[in-house]
Length: 358
Image 1: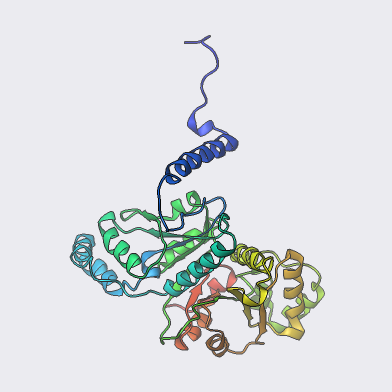
Image 2 (image 1 turned 120 degrees about the horizontal axis):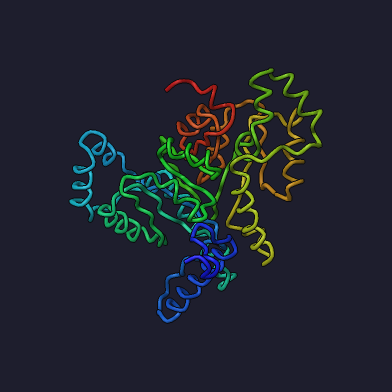
């Protein structure tokens, strides 16, 4: 009736502050419930406090044969196969050892800060059907992984859920989904399995980043691609004191830096379980100063900076043995793969226009 007072706001009209308050109330209710439960397993942190890494099932596990069945025989045969084999443990996929290393960092953080929720939260983000979930759960439990949050979308793209889960990094074996996530402003990369077996550190998370179009924007790479190397060197020297714009993985490097500082605060710098690397094709003398000054202007540290002046990255990565290496150019990804490095392609920037056809 008109004159009965102001209308109640519709759900879509709720302010961001109201939505945040409701979310806090939901978490308070959940905490009150779980506080009455006895468990030795660490509870997942609140998404607002966590560094959320969303991983697809094909990134976490080797599902090459299962994917072939899906593509050749369709979804019904795929689900049937998964159910028949749900007690057969899946083998590790390209993101597996990265996830294991994240969980080791969490263990160390909980030892030093038992009541702090600023740590990694791993979410399984997959378009698998719920019926496949039993095999995924069995495999996760077999390896002792702490992955409590699942998002199984039954054939629909999971990308829309990444924002709802407050995702800081999304890793998938599906390049189309990764591209979609990048376009939505979410740090993302396509995982590729190494062609050789390599032993990775159990005690230190090692993350290697390319610079341009990964940590930084592709503004300088555009000049290199369009105007040549000499013009690129000239541009970088002229703009040495002007920080580069941020790239898609800058936020994740920042997240790693925040966690490193928590270890430093406990006098654990020399025993820090996180180590970061910049592995760039840039030349140090000709174009390296701008990169280092940009990181300094952001208040970010990188543990090791390797300027290769166009040399192949593979041999350096073999020495580092990172759990993941982010790069925007497929020929660097392929070179890393051949020598046994786990590589993740970031489909961002002008280099994507210059990729050779598959």
